[in-house]
Amino acid sequence: MVLIPGGTFLMGCSLSSEMTDCPNDETPNHSVTLTKAFYLGRYEVTQAQWTARVGSNPSHYNSPSSSVPADQVPNRPVENVSWNDVVNDFQPGTGLRLPTEAEWEWACRAGTTTAFHGLLTQQHGFSDESQLGSIAWYWENTAVLGLQTLPVGGKAPNGFGLHDMLGNVSEWCADRYDNNFYAHSPTVDPVSEHGGLIETRPARGGAMPFTADKCRSSIRDDSTPNLTFKDGGFRVARTP
Image (cartoon, rainbow, N blue to C red; front, side):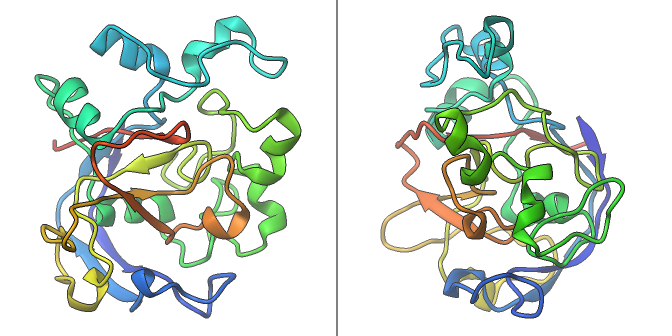
């Protein structure tokens, strides 16, 4: 895991930096301060890690392919796990948790304000989708492989040393999803505890079958906590 320091950043979409018009649930772009450091997984939780903890592997992409040899299949990210599966089956007794949306976006951006986070050697980020393949598995570079997940850590890390924050599988977060949360979000350590009439949970970062505009640092998705997706996984956080 990587220790992520606290800090202040602009959360949400900004027309000056993102490559598309800002969806309503990513606005307004607003300043957020995280007052406490936290640990976040360097990689998405893998099939091997899930199996060791839970005892079975629910993943759709659990077989070798021409792009993923058998010995690397356990290093694919686990998917087909619901928010409830993570919270009820994987987390108990570990001291681990899901990150909040604010923690996730701060960790993903690593100091950037652009559509896509940067690299260790290009820490200011970029908004040119032609460069996205250097940091993410997404439609453009997985369609030719048959649209499948790839072993974690295969793309360059961001400025905090985190891999696959964009693409591969989308990642569950702890909060309740609220389409209008950014309009009334606290500016310090925000956590959305109230959503709409139907409780849903946020997922961040986009996934391997998504186009570039759906794999931005500010992109927000959501689903009911009992549903699973073959492109939906997670990474874990821990409070020091």
